[in-house]
Every structure is written in C-alpha cells, then in structure tokens.
Image (cartoon, rainbow, N blue to C red; front, side):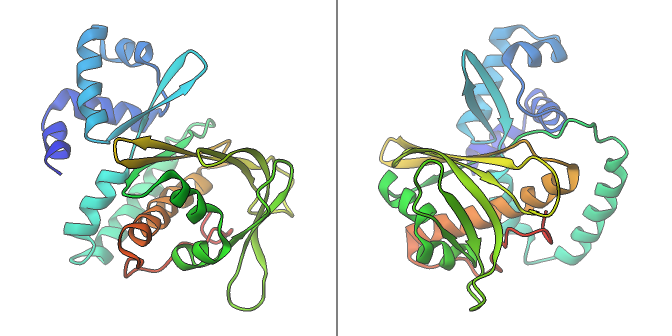
Amino acid sequence: MELVFKALADHTRRDLLDRLRARNGQTLRELCEDLGMARQSATQHLDVLVRASLVTVVRRGRERLHYLNPAPIHEIEQRWISGFDQPRLRALSAIKRQAEEYAMTETIPTYVYVTYIHATAAQVWKALTDADLTARYWGNSNVSDWQPGSAWEHRRTDGSGKAVVTGTVLEVEEPNRLVVTFEDSPDEQREPSTVTYLIEPHQDIVRLTVSHERLPNADMYRGIAQGWPAVLANLKSLLETGSVLPQSPWEMSPAHV
C-alpha cells in the first residue's frame, strides 16, 4: 500500500489518473499532449503509477496503451471503507453516476483490471477454465472444452443449469492467453463484447490482466466495473488461501450489466 499512497501524493500523477478515468487507453503521446508535459517527465510519473499497479500498460501492435487499474483502490475500499459507512457511500455514488451520465460520450472505453496472484500460470488457467473452481469463487460455473471456435457458458449452480452468459472461444494459448466473446443478452441484436485473459509470470508470482472490450453501453460498463474487481479478488483469495472472501459472488447476468 505504501507505493499506492506515494503515487497518489503527487498532484501530477493524480491528474494523469483523472485523464485516464475520463478517457482510458491513451498512448504516451496523447497523455503528453493533454498535459503539455515533456515525454520524459510523463514517463517518470507513469512509471511510478505502474509500479503501484494504479496504471497498467497493454500493447496493441506498436502502441503502448495506458489503462487505469482499479485493483489497488478496490483493496483500500475493502480494507478501510466497506465495513464502516457503505450504505451512505453507495447512495452518494448513485447520485454521482446519474450526474455523470450526461457527460458520457458515445464511445465506451475498454475496461482493464490487473491483479497479482501468488500461484503458477497453470493454476490461474485452471481457475479460469475449471467449472468446479469457477463455481466456488464466481458463484456460477464456466463450462466449455476451451477449444477455438467452441461455445462457452456461464451456468447457474442452483440446479437449473441455466446459462446466464454465453459466448464463443476465440483464442487459446494455454496457460497464458484466453479470448472469448461475452453475450449477456442473446435476445438483443447487438455485437457481443470480448474478454481477454492474459496470464504472465512476474518474478515468482503471476500477473493476471483482464480486458473487457467492445462494451455496448455505459450501463454495461458500470456493471462490469463493479463485478470484475469482486470476482478477481475472490479468485486471488481462493488460490492464495484456499477460501473465498466473505462477500457475495458476482453473477454475470443482465441484472448486473
């Protein structure tokens, strides 16, 4: 946590985070233009934010895109805020979201979340693709043979076997990369969003990056922005401690997105 608080102590770095919050996925050149700052200075500030896991860098071809990573803020909220005055904070947050709807653009940003897990890449891969394990930390089971072109389903574990999310497996590079489509409302005529799981060894632990792209609307963005931190915190807890966190699992369904 010390790296997080150190990073947030500087107003320039807070400004960078605000700009990424307003428009996620910017290149270094775009950030420098917005700030009127030299590339070297911006790079130094971004390096501090990356070390604190507040910003993550995703490569797209030759470009390096910078994304706001909510994981450390989520951990602060869970440790110092959630058990104290959550109902009032939720009410204030709802009012704030309604006010911000008027400022939302038609372009919905990609959601990126990064977490570090004390596990092997193979263990994280199994946690993402094993139906029994996903049922433990997600509340529902992810079911597929996980081959390119195959279907996958997010099924209820209440005995009904109902699929609340369906999709297609697009890319499989076990145990490092998995890409699937995400169709939460099959009755609606809209393009499915896409989820990419990137599992990378990082010293003696694993860096898991989840990117959720092509989101159809602001409501879905807000839903998955609340859901992914919860489910990935549960996954991390399960792999590191053998048990999930004392909180309700997130169900990927239209009610949440």
